[in-house]
Length: 451
Image (cartoon, rainbow, N blue to C red):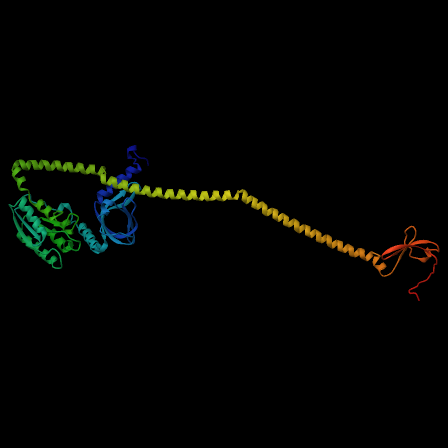
């Protein structure tokens, strides 16, 4: 299957950008709890880490303009509670959370209970915009359910005195936190049902999740949803969101903002009273609605400077880490090559070859000396053997015992007296010399002694 036109083919950058816009539009703000791991704090001051539980994990980034407000020292293994917006890092196509708030996860159980009840009531349709009732533009009677000693009441009254005091206000006092708060608020809502004011304002000042927990109870949320008059909820500060805020017909970020929402400004009424005001209001509302839709469409295509900077910061940190790793690997390779070159140079060194040749010469000399000594020993042994043989054959030992060798004039050995005759000249050889004698007498026979 082929694309119908080249306009249907997306680049990787365009795909990642559209995915990021879709994710950010769907998850504008979430609370997540989990365990910190792989925590990194580069020189830029931004934080990068992984948030995980037993079954999954997600990458997170908390930039320096947000993490400088954190009142804790994060470390691997900590259980934390995060608030942020879900996004996509376009450079790697990586799903991540851009964290705006971090706190220890002591509120984790309450936050899980909050999310569970939120999902339950949302599935039942209690948060649907279709069931929310419009607020009267100029209320004649407003019932306030809050603590009579709280700062919220003072803030609301001060705004109404400044903006518009031509309406009746009924205070229905109630505790706004603690064990008795649930029963008193339910009773106050029942009283408001009897009074039938134009609207009911349920409000209190800010606090921790535990302080605001009464307004996250299912019993109070369901009673607010069934009240016959419109209810405006203003619980805590801007960052706080309670279940009653979601169930009520309207939600204000603070008590003062709720006071301004419920009543018009006196000066505005004086300037825009009458038919002209109504016509202009209808025209302006239509124009604002169109502009709001156009702005929303444009907002989906544009990246805010802060988001652009965050993407650039994250890309810069990633490139810095990659450059450091590449330089380290290159340095390691150069070091190995230098060590190998040194080894090769040492192997080719003249001194090493001279040493090797010297060893060979000494071995040759040693072998030559051993060969000469062996040859001399063998020659000496042969000479000794020959001397012993020669000595065995020599007449000298015999002569040394007193015998004489007799030779004729020709030098022939005479071993028989029959070969001699008187007057014959012979030579007698003794042990230590020879003499010439004349034969005077010849006696035959064997004479072993003078006797």
